[in-house]
Length: 285
Image 1 (tube, rainbow, N blue to C red):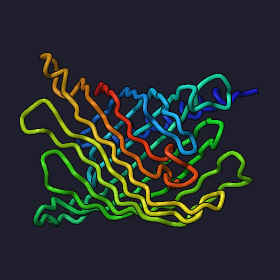
Image 2 (cartoon, one colour):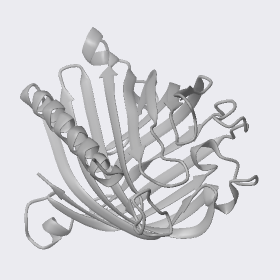
Image 3 (cartoon, helix red, strand yellow):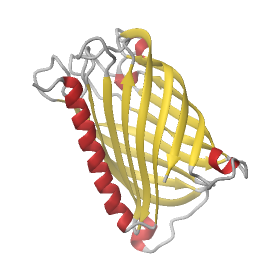
Image 4 (cartoon, helix red, strand yellow):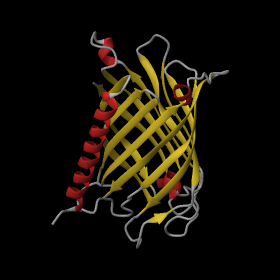
């Protein structure tokens, strides 16, 4: 019989294979591409309804590429908690696989017209999905979410994209008899990668402000969720005389209030408000 631990590894493996297939197809017709494996670690993660700090080690696979009409972004994380976020296996921390895919279509590339004005570099539309599975004792998330909406590309060194996305989200946690679909809701999302002048440092990250999504699976009203995740990264490979943009190290900080829409001032408590510093390393190929 398959254990939850083995099942989660199999699911993450399938997600990684699917991502690799998507990346190979995107790379075949791409104008540019960047693929990276990453590791990050912190000891002050939080989970709703859990008042303890949780330690996590996170392995990531990321791919970004540009094609004739826009850009692709794919990220798969395997998040491994310590025993303060227990798993259904018992005696160990929970494991989670979280996959994100976004495709942004550039309106100027589709129409051949210029949409640059003021601080705006261009306009477009973004669609994609979030997918996760986790084997923790309390909730065992199985999130499925589709996203769609307009994107504004800001004229900065590197990139800064701001999107207003409509979200269609559902979940099937332990203890709930069927998949539950939340009320349709909106997310204001920003993503950036900005070099710091001519230095080997860059400021990278994303920020999401997510509107309430109605009542949750158990009848409690959700709250506005705010997630900031930013990192200062050093191009360590270039500093040491190697190829530019290959090996990066840095510090990351995550500020997450009302995590997953849970009210940090309500029953979910301090576990729904995370302030998490991390160490981060990336290898690009």
